[in-house]
Length: 429
Ligand SMILES: [Zn+2]
Image 1: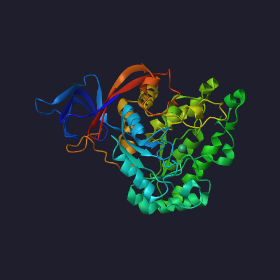
Image 2 (image 1 turned 135 degrees about the vertical axis):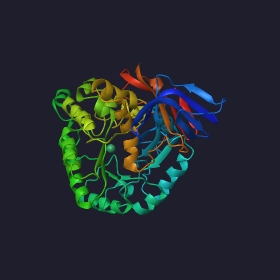
Image 3 (image 1 turned 180 degrees about the horizontal axis):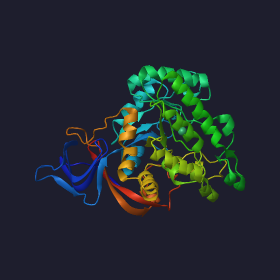
Image 4 (image 1 turned 120 degrees about the vertical axis):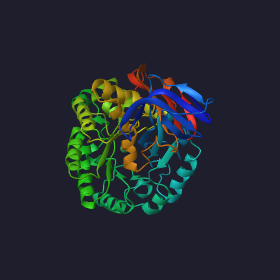
């Protein structure tokens, strides 16, 4: 993949323009001048503009991922903000939020500032999410107000659930002053115990210790009750189970402040895939049964789930090339995201391509309060060009991340990102 500076005048010609903000699909061109939108639809660009033929392709907003782990500071051998930004562009993402479970964690105004400054050198927009508790220890609240001032867009101890209900209550109460979401990795650690995969028939069959769906749903239920009580904005990350979905659906019928996300891997795989003992499928929360997977699809269809987020979690080879019990939790996911969700939701489940694009663009942006009207003249160009029908086999050559822990190798995906434009740069596959 090449990333290069875009021409002074660039025209993406004859594409199918999908504008998720206005809810419109039409044929036309997009003209980018000095890195900003200069015209959409019928454009009158200078004759010497660089043009790219986009016939048969979709031109839409750059994707936005609310949930990635870029490992900087501390584990730059796994990923840095720069390598993560490359992986993001390969996946069509122009904007991401990085989780704070770095080493040290993003638990102070200074650490939030560190990310903001480093992000300036990257070709995409990177927003830090601050830790809820100091050192993610679960005991002392961070200086959320000061961190918010420095640019923290939300708060989470992701990777580590907030076990203490009183701490979660205080965090939610405090967040209402800042009007930012609290994102809690919902797993009851006692119920999860030493579970390495979903507890059920397959875990019994494989002889691996199970992590029951109750571990997620019990904590999601607690968090929803606390969110309602405090009036705070709760965002439930990487929902994996039918039980948790049922709680969220019920609460959303009366509380519009609750939002949730699902990962491509929870939509794509079920626990039968773990019969291969592929450690790249070891994630938290775990990949669950086909029944759970179908419940997630239903939840996407009826709006219980608001957006797609990858939970891109890079790990070194030695963290994954070990026994299933010892392997680290997590997989990378930016590069395979669109091909995977487009295949499941559009080809298999009959959603419209417009629906999938909303889940990757306008909906995550609205949760974080990011600018949604990206085809407005004068707006900085954040654009993704897609070949939505392309069938391709995912392989190592598609990875831009510094880590390679993907379970999508060899999988046939549908829909590929062709061009990503962000911050005056363009990536071409
Ligand atoms: Zn998590």
